[in-house]
Amino acid sequence: MTATNKSRPRGRPRHFDPEEAVATAQRLFHARGYDAVSVADVTQALGINPPSFYAAFDNKAGLFARVLDRYSQIDGIPFADLLRADRPVATSLAAVLEEAARRYAADPAASGCLVLEGTRCNDGDARQAARALNVGAENAIRDYIAARYPDEAERITDFVSTTMSGLSAKARNGHSVDQLLASARLAGQAVAQALPA
Image (cartoon, rainbow, N blue to C red; front, top):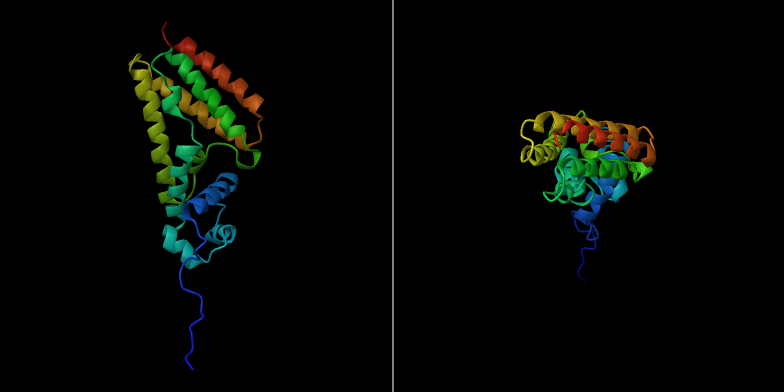
């Protein structure tokens, strides 16, 4: 009589899908913020054990970097679509601000901008990953403005970036989409007045 080994195989279970796990983690980080989500929270939400988590993502900051990448591709503001060469700069920037207002208030359970909120987390690696995306967005805005208004690019980019940070913070504090859109539209008017005709 030979014994068969019926023990469970080691490692992640077959049903573990890293992309689905990243989507689930994105909802956690967006709803609660990076610092408030523990590895235990993530493993419980994913239904995996810590060794499987570390094998897939190395650490919490590694998972967050994957989350930020997914967020920027799927849920982030589509700068390439909004910063168009075929319309006035002020119109495009107003569209960016209004889109930010809509997206930041779209889900009351996960409001604000995951990237902007991530720039303030306590973990240095996670904060740096969020800042890199934030700087990339600011550079896209600055380059877009500079193509037609090189002398105005720095200050208008700072204003748009500051407005977006404020919209994110207000969304996190419960402002409605209508409130955020009102602020975004006022900021869009300010941009139009600040740019030479």
